[in-house]
Image (cartoon, rainbow, N blue to C red; front, side, top):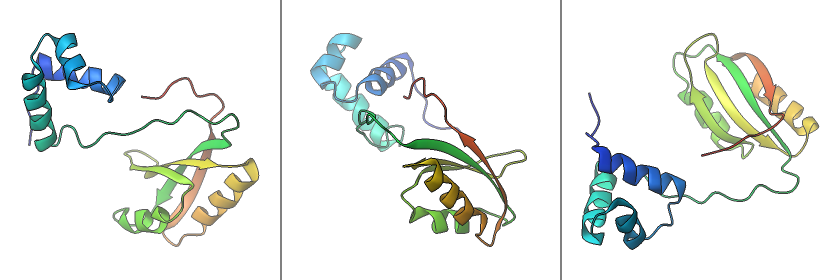
Length: 145
């Protein structure tokens, strides 16, 4: 099933909001050459259709952000819902994606130290449905959107 049809103005509006979700409707209208009312209606439609699912805040990275890593997980369960439920309670996990290929699940992890990463990796490896893990340590982060 196809999602909502987005025209060029929708795409431009979404690009502006992605760059700065705090832009006012007046500022968006000026940038896109539309009225504030037209921007408001487009935003409401995009929210209603689920294209815009929310607005967020990106925090400045701390001076010492700790350790970021990706854990590649092989999970023998038929779906990954049980694994997701087991890991939701762990604040170390900042994201979890099921993927295709030799890896079943990719976890984005943020911890205070390499030692904490090792402990967390061991915890994940002991979960009953996990067959194996591989750790990718983030060395340098170039940008985030």
